[in-house]
Length: 95
Ligand SMILES: [Zn+2]
Image (cartoon, rainbow, N blue to C red; front, side):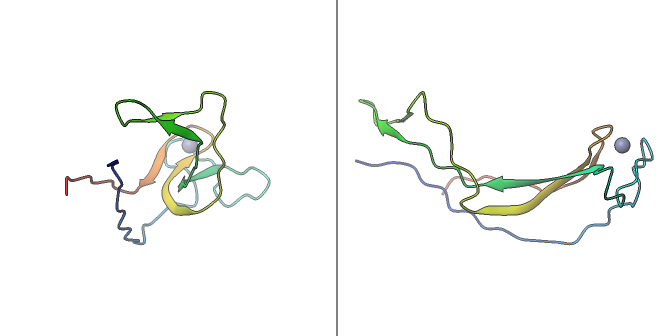
């Protein structure tokens, strides 16, 4: 039985983030306000089975387990207004 698998190569770079939102002026350094959200990819495993056509079929009642491993961080956004502050890039190509 053949299935598809993805190989992931991660590069990390530094970006400049303002200390306050350029759109709504929310303070990103205020520990009580929590005005910035950091996004990451999490490795989630879900139980399932291979159907007759070989496609993976998720168990409908299963919720994913998270936190097994992750790639951080892939994006930052203002929690107050939703403004995007920085985004990582994603490129896919066929082998
Ligand atoms: Zn904002």
